[in-house]
Image 1: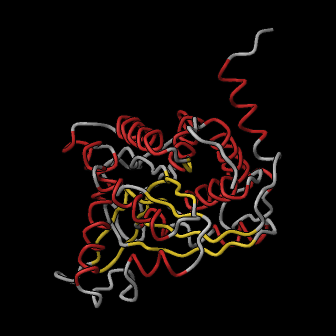
Image 2: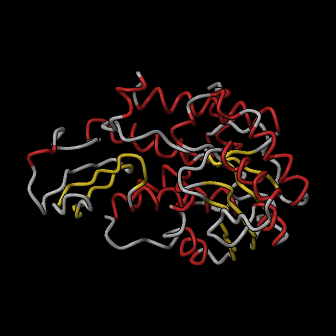
Length: 304
């Protein structure tokens, strides 16, 4: 039997999980937005359960594009009292704060599928990181496409699958241009969706306007959060729908991908299992994380 190139690549990539000197301790800084804030819930306990030491800090601003990160940096350079990161730090200060092993970058999700939004700001940020954290490896987090019920698609004229395809093309092009590895969080989400097949429910009911509190729509996707809260203007209780961010199930999947990628670990061997997620889904998330790491085509697979 002749082995296909894809099969051979996957086997070689999977071997990277077990071969070589995997790091046992890492200092990681994210230059990102809410799509890395979502690591806070589960990546630290997943790493701790794996017996590795992780120092994780964030240069994050909600909804922040690469362009805004760069413009905030320029503003801080002119006015050092401008502290855009949690009101405490400039980007320069955070990059120089530790001897980081890894610094991650990513595009804000609404811009992620638009190639022109990356440049020249990605290049500017990469240059700054290399200047201020010269020993750190710069890594891209591949983000994910929105829940298929998100209202943005009608305005943009695309669907969730197209958003994923285009953002992946953009991240892979950036990685190839600069010789960077990619954390395939978005691919893990895509694998989960494809594995679910007909069981994947974006939002049920499709029109939730007739729901009464405390009822919320049902989703089997890992992207999508629903809650009732008071409208500050009217004082009425309204259903808030977030079809952009990972829900707790998705945050666990993201954490498994990051853990396996950063530490060369096998996500299926992870012993941390959050409460409120079924054993069947936990096993599925572990498989998707492992497959994503093994299959995502990297332009550079070098070990730190």
